[in-house]
Image (cartoon, rainbow, N blue to C red; front, side, top):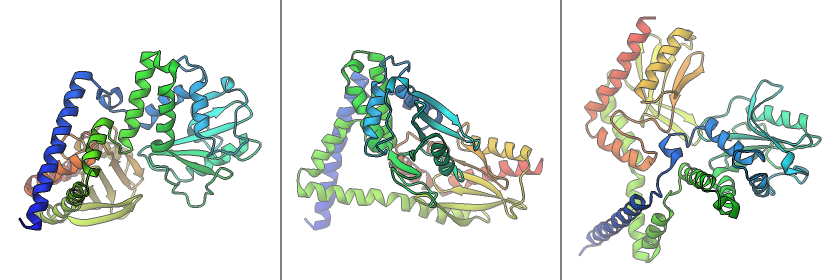
Length: 400
């Protein structure tokens, strides 16, 4: 047997073993309902406004959980290393928790903790980007309301820095980055393990499902037992690890293959389509740019999670036309509120929940990319979907 044949055989055997593990865990979920999650079912797991309401109620000593200030205490314990020593509340029961707190700069902070002496602002970013000077304004509000510097807690999936490079990072400065993956997951874990939480099933289950949702959108497996079993299979032997590595290398190339099809065969089938790249946090949009009508062009990303219309000469788009374009983009992406006004000359939509027509986006990006790769194997169908989007926009703009 050649080395190539040996690797192929080992990979096939490993995939069979993984499939068996998945089947076992699926059967377990069917019998126990362990995978049933209200946040995922309702599609609200990554909606910042709704998630902030849930977090704020858990933090609130007078929240509907009726557990007093214990959840707030666990949160402050989690923040002990992130905040300066003077950012402590003398009496947690007197802390007021506010949503969308209005600032002097006419901004709205997602969540604030305030006992009259200490004011802690929390800005939550799950998928949305930052507005200009947003964190800077919140830091200024914090300085105004505190006798000494208390930074903004800037909460993102992975604890990334603010995009505002003029800000100073650190517990004694403008903001401190914290993450769902570490801080919120750790906090919810402590809340869930509390004996009084375990004795109140509705609260216990909501916290458990909330923790699962956080792990899910941070890229962790929701079913930990499945992950553990696969991990043992992969890490059990050197051969097992090498085989898994070869499989991963193949899977990791999938994204590039999808882009190649989009920029290659599909682009050639759409008249006038051009490759288009634009920088964004964490990478670039890898899109096609198509002239819709004179002075209007559509940019559609290879994964269909981003579309926007812009004017070639940066002319303003009137409100009536903008609203119609927003409606068309939402419909094209299969969503209700993904699109909005990005600027006076650009109407856009981005959502991790968006999907190519006919594909159900379950939130697993690798599975979605696989299904997209299969769909792009018939490039004419993909080209026709793009042409349909262009024609819909053309009708809107011509009728304005």
